[in-house]
Amino acid sequence: MTKKKDELSESLEDYLEVILQLEKTNKVARVKDIAVKMQVLRGTVTGALKSLAEKELINYEPYSYITLTPRGAAIARDITKRHGVLKNFLFKVLQIENERADAIACRMEHAMDKAAVERLVRFVEFIDQCPKTQQAWIDSFLEYCRTHEIDHDKCTTCIDRCLSRHQADHVKQA
Amino acid sequence: MTKKKDELSESLEDYLEVILQLEKTNKVARVKDIAVKMQVLRGTVTGALKSLAEKELINYEPYSYITLTPRGAAIARDITKRHGVLKNFLFKVLQIENERADAIACRMEHAMDKAAVERLVRFVEFIDQCPKTQQAWIDSFLEYCRTHEIDHDKCTTCIDRCLSRHQADHVKQA
DNA sequence: AGTTGGAGTTTGGTACCCCAAACATTTTGA
DNA sequence: TCAAAATGTTTGGGGTACCAAACTCCAACT
Image (cartoon, rainbow over all chains, first blue to last red):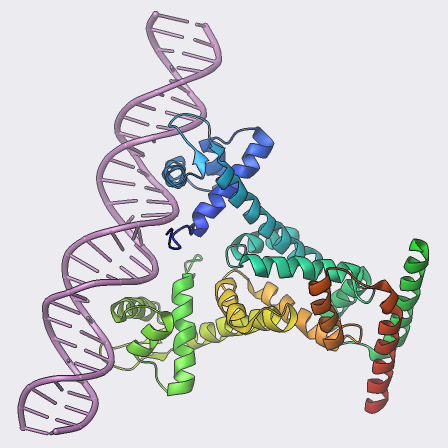
């Protein structure tokens, strides 16, 4: 039926993301604001809006406000989620500087399919919940980035600490 | 001087990557083979080659073989490295199925800057070397993906095993 | 109400990347 | 050696995405 031409270009995905963001902060999205966020001229925005309207992802009448349709909003939320997940991984785990993490996430978010995003969510969750990793392990990673080596003499105490922490946490909950 | 217009499009980056790959396996790159790998018609390849030749990234004479210039080869190797790192992470760590990991890596590789790639390399290295993670931890992650929860009762023994393994490895090397 | 300036749109142009199909060259193998 | 076959190139056309600048609309202010 619909073949597979439901596919949006990366650019249009970005527009949806920005529109959602503007709806949240400003109630409605205006061409000028979209243009600023997308770093593009207003004329370019008009073109993109027509395209999105054709696909029934936004409600658009010339000279009027722009709102997302339910389908558009769903896609926008999905993309925003990807963005958040990726940025979180880049920033919190890989410890890439905030702005840059955001910029990279913005480009990477279009490359992953649903399953991959889901996997990454689980992965970050797992780091956060497995007693062997958590923040202590991420801190060790930062150390490793500086020194480029692991001091195996320290590992025993590190693992011991990990065990104590786990037992403490475990007792707290019991 | 050169401002920042050294920037290659994602598409041209892909062409360089493919040409490098073909140079390795076939000694030289031919238009038809590039077309197959890029999933594009031969005519499209010719256009891309002209573009790359203009930027002095390949040696190109009509109807003749194609080779990378030193600059082109350097870029191609860089992109190939990104691709490998990403695929490795997606496949080995996130355990995304081989083909799909490759396809996603192929799209993500253009989004990361040098520092981010470096970080990811270190990250995978670190997982592989830190006694608290390594393959055992990755296996636990897979388990977590299935169950969506951590069985904290098992953590103590898991950490104990980790300690033993580390001590065994450490002794081996001493 | 009339004017004016900001917001939105249109138009014409560029660049990229692709396809289809006609065309040119090289390779091949009979 | 000399035509097919395979390979490579050109041409014309389509889609997207952008800019610059002319233009239209609307709303605010006097």
